Length: 128
Picture: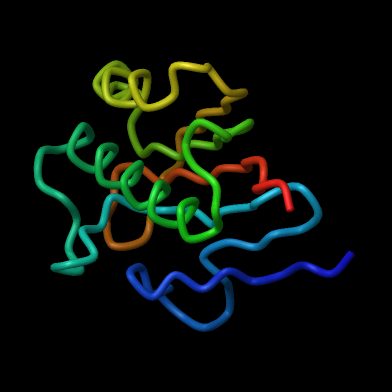
């Protein structure tokens, strides 16, 4: 199997060293998504909840470009700069992932652009 990069013109990567997503076999691996509004290039307003909402929207955009969707996500990795924002993050997260995929949340000291949250997922690819 050879990894197949997935280009998502609506969400250009920060640099050319990675793909927004890669398909390998029956899986889609989505690179970490910040809560950056692609129309402005800035972090979404509304604190951790606003950034979480936008990060999930960005994940949805990438997955749909790959022919998949949030409902096919099996694993979510979340990087958050302050655990005291966990409850607010989960209020936005839970409705987007009612099927309760496997999840890891890790507090980190810093994220790109001063973001409060970054999310990456692994999802099932469409059946060919």
